[in-house]
Image (tube, rainbow, N blue to C red; front, side, top):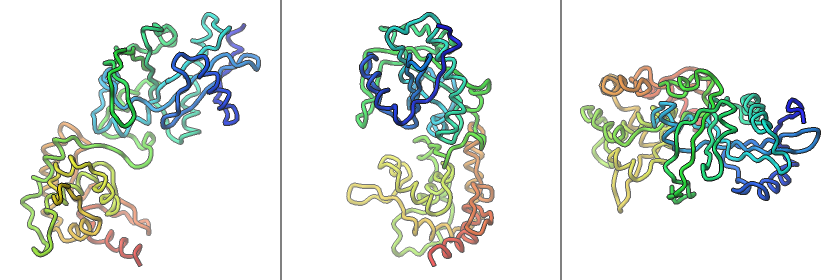
Length: 351
């Protein structure tokens, strides 16, 4: 066999059944069920299938990888889609030929970025894989210039039950598809070309706990009657939502409703019948349009002064917060201008 005659391409929809049958029969882990964005590849030599590969969603947590990248927790959640895991690599029987596996992996590495962009409409920056040292030594990955970062702690994901001890640590290998991969993934702001959909940044528990205190000095413009949610809670949730990429009243309200009970407790949400309740879209809108922009801007500047030095993406103020585009194409600013043009936009949408 001439190695240069080997070709690699994605498996077609019509070939999925055959692919999974071969993987289930020959791979010691069986056929992997697709997790998130997944691409299956087949290596072919003169029309014959000689190897199968799968690339799927990256691990949510992997200490060696996360330390190597250097990204913060709140950025990691939003950027995992730029990482993919080589979850399966199978050389079919009778095709265990010297250097063939490395050649096949290299061919995949060359075309993965273009294929990912074609199928999922966003770029890819990093490949990862886990190798069980009880079965393999990672020779293929070493030969293809992957970097060995260390070992996992021996846990595996168990669906909704979280992580369970697996008693079998895996070797962690990564392959950067660009020279500046670490910088791109760890920087405070992700370049637009690498963003996919609405940002999904996350706040830490300590940041959630700290936010309400920055708004306690702001006078509450609402009537005393009927108030359930504290002013500082509403402003803290709105700020947290915008820091995490949400735009407009609806986006803020959806983020608020998605908060867990622990997160709602950190924001000091209204507590009744053994549950914390997040403010509704109406309450958020009605409150934000009444708060004085100058007082809000001052509170937000204090937040930025304390937190942005360590993390630039936490910088925020009332005039330059994440901007939104209304139906008429006008640029408006959340918070300081939310009671003006954005309110008109909201009313128009309701009418």
